[in-house]
Length: 412
Image (cartoon, rainbow, N blue to C red; front, side):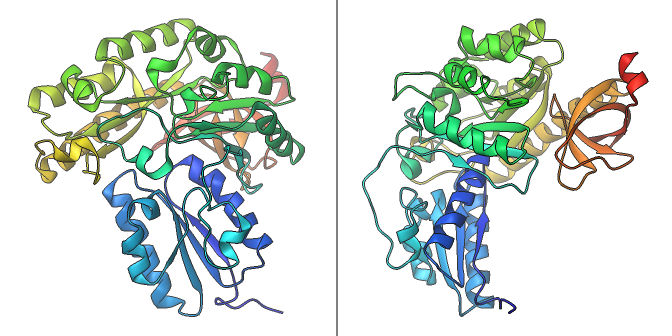
């Protein structure tokens, strides 16, 4: 019997890798509740554009699928509960979104409980494993603490159980993710480095870490990032800006020199490490000279994977009350940062031509990522989910073209 659009349930994720991981748990909760014809939008609120996209998607669903129940959860739902409710959607809190009873009737609003790991589905060769949520810092631009509360970590035992599930279903790379991943363990008496070491006792072939606060990379974590071959040579740093006055007004816990010094140490200890970073353009009071410092950071920190966006004020945050930069100027500065980052990334990719790499093949059998997170497309298909040695032979835009290596090429 075919399933109509009204009968079919689905989960639509916006935003970060943590949302992707949590989205799979939401899907399981919807199925456990026996809910049919339910559309769950797992929203993001990192920027006003992310919230706008969620509103647009909800309006479209309400218009095009009038028989379906539309549920909105996630960070945008926390911050704009009344707005989504007024549209006709049902709002489920972040704390309740992974509970089956939230999709079997009126949403429950339980008190905060220990965070359980969130594991993405088997539809990707890589598994996203959410191990932490919330944030206990007070960056002036960020509404995350309003939407997700203070930092909470999943237990090491529960994380290992989820990791075993991923390994058992054939996923050979696990990406640890969280709102403030580097703070993992602060609330339960352990650390991110200790968690990674515990994971490496399992038959996991690759571990990758999502965004890290540079101020929280201690000696133990640094050693894992630079000396452990199964920890991928790819570090994404939550830098946000490259000017000390802007960083101070953001209430960040590092300064420009700290970021540059950290990258120099990482690259010295592991030459093949690739650097990514989050950067905000047009933060309140940012003048031309301050922006130039952020622009220069792309070269000074060799940033090849930039997550760059213009500042947008989030209601309830201190930065929203500061003197604002014209939105057009913020967008122009973001575009300039993206252009500089694209140039840096393409030069870096060009330097990869002729080198060998180990590539995790995605489910399509043709695309994937090298250890350093360079996107790769194969000239001939390989087994989905496999890890293959390849020769990088050309650059195609922002990805590398590669040919599988023969055994004699590997030996050479």
